[in-house]
Image (cartoon, rainbow, N blue to C red; front, side, top):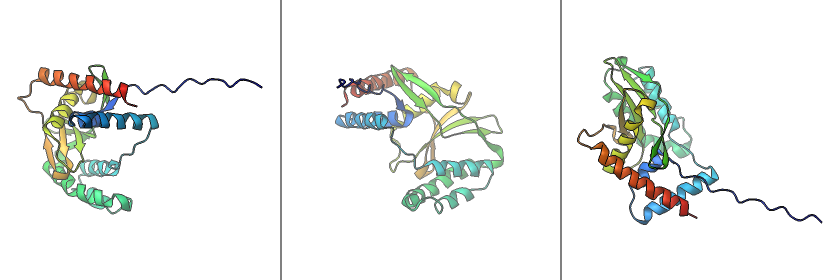
Length: 218
């Protein structure tokens, strides 16, 4: 009778974070940080995850591209699956407010963006804007959307806008990073008073702790 063949254990996934995951991590304190990273590691290992906001992003882009004044956004809550309708009903009014804040849509076009991989210390972080905008006056914006019930914290804002800005040559050259709080329809721009070197040191420390927690998470 042949002896059973030993199989090598499945290697643990290497530390990695999306921009959303890393900014949610820096927003936490104490044991909540470890719990959050442990959850991310398990999710990565199981390859699970689902984005419920995809159809809203498509509707917003359609309203910008076709200058339809919010018609696609107004219709989207009625066509998503029933389980997602309360979410969309909460998001759409703010998304429409943001759309109107862009002004005359005949002067705004969608611009193609690219995902980028930025290294924060030794931690790879995926920088992935939801959309890009190009204005007739030459301005460009790379836009991330914040969907959470609570507004983004100052830490999350600082981290998101800094990390997008440092990779902008790959994401959308010449663009300004923008984080839009969808539920409130508010667009946040970089704080000119923020010192990039100080932000970089802070994020490097956060990334080192993230990596250490990841490597020890069960």
